[in-house]
Length: 135
Figure 1 (cartoon, rainbow, N blue to C red):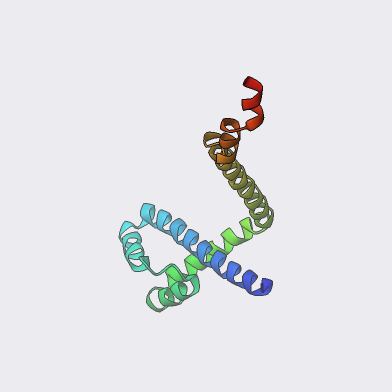
Figure 2 (figure 1 turned 120 degrees about the vertical axis):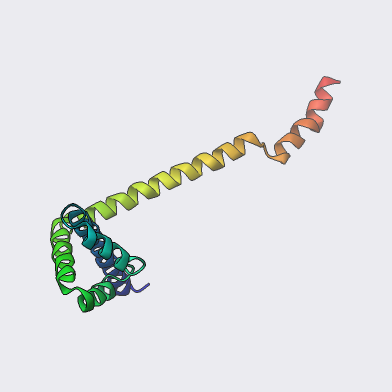
């Protein structure tokens, strides 16, 4: 397990997600101030936002002012969320894991209660000691 590579991949994914969030923010702003430009940006962005950096590069070639605006919003969002993000991720994963374990335990417990093991049934039916006592 290469933790450094995992951290790099996670950071890149987070960067792309923050680019997406910045795009959504800019689209909402443009929807109120310049609907035709918002429509254009939405069409331009369709299917391209998976890799945030490649998306920004491509947008720079077409409309650099929008690329700069999205980058500025992305940077602002990153500055606001990165302080408490590590603790939120740790806590979220711990809570999600606990919930998954609880659900799994409930499933296997219900399964065991609803279908008793064949050995237990067989012992109660053909226990010679019980047969001798009744006779």
